[in-house]
Length: 198
Image (cartoon, rainbow, N blue to C red; front, side):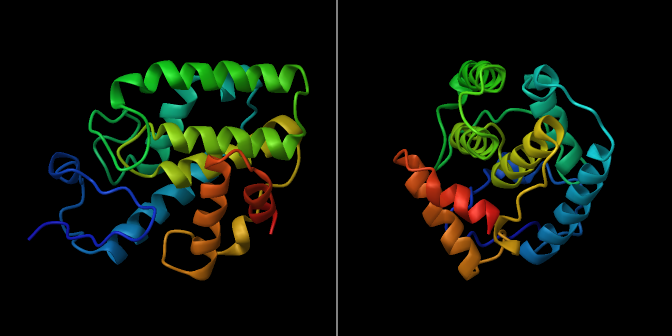
């Protein structure tokens, strides 16, 4: 039977090869997939508890990949591995390592030089990371957790609330979130910062 997923606005469709990377063959619907992914993500969040991370550790390719693998590794074989397929969003796959390195270098510079306040550093990083779209799927959730880790580990502040809603389902909160991301695409980060704090 296999996985049959209907995608909503802003979600990245998986290629046939990527769908074959599903580790749990009994998953056949979006609802089941969301449930198993959420359980895996909660384990990844628990893994971050009490973990001390410096800016150099947080802003490293190793951490970016490790976090994604922790978030999705029980569900997908390709978790923590950069995508090799082209998507409806993101840069060309062969540019991922280069563009990610630029972002990581920029982020370390922003933190070391207090270029922006903590909220803007976290959201600016989140937005650029999701724009690169490193992985076959899970990029939005991964980039939001990265923003939360920046707030918590580097600035010792509370994580963002992200509209206090499930952003995986087609809800008004998701519509507002996607609209804010699209404004950030045009260099207006304020709506995305406001949404993250709402």
